Length: 279
Ligand SMILES: O=C(O)CCC(=O)C(=O)O
Image (cartoon, rainbow, N blue to C red; front, side):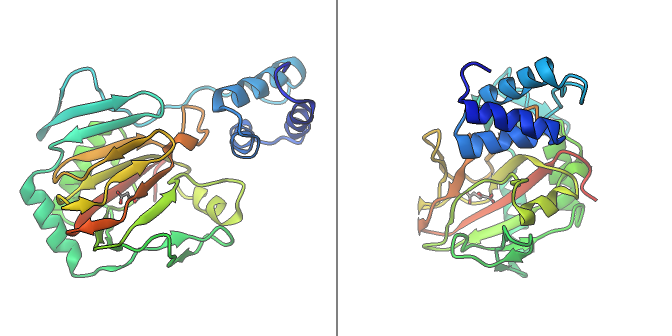
């Protein structure tokens, strides 16, 4: 571990000796030490190889939701979806025509009747709470709640090659003028007691799909401040991003925000994908 300060080298060896999980250690190093995830993982790996090989086998890369971006059209059983932009690190894919206009309108009409202020997860106890950082209103749906929801979920599973069972329920969200979701991560921070509780059911949120159900006259883009990217809402399109790498280390580059809507109303549906079945 020659390129790592002595204090961090000691921290790694002590935590490995205590039996801490390498993925969580890498997460702390990225967050608190501002190390690149690859360097953090390599340093932990080296420490395991040299001094702690007997404690646990080296972690193997795990599957992630993934979209085939080898062509400009992705054919799934019930639709042809356009591949508009594909970024490798962080993994971000912009999809065109994922939903039809009718599907967008029907999902809005269905969710519209039961909108409530959208919550965030408390760092302290994991309960959901209303917060000034998230001012949209939304409708939480059960997985498979209607034929339309089932159709969309099956399509998302085909597009991302990720089981329907690993998905949380769809959320339909409405942002009126001034509403926003300030920069945040979708992955759960295992070092905080509240988010850690959410990992018990289905594991980490390894992927996110934001589907745009409406155009927006001004504002309301989904921005990724750490990579200088903003996706403007276009009815029927969607942005997918992977929240962790294949070692389940959360990706700091996935910081993202729903920018304030300036004119018009923004409607989206979001889908969070877990590492295991979400039951
Ligand atoms: O409103 C958006 O564009 C992004 C939504 C979002 O960040 C989320 O639901 O996690």
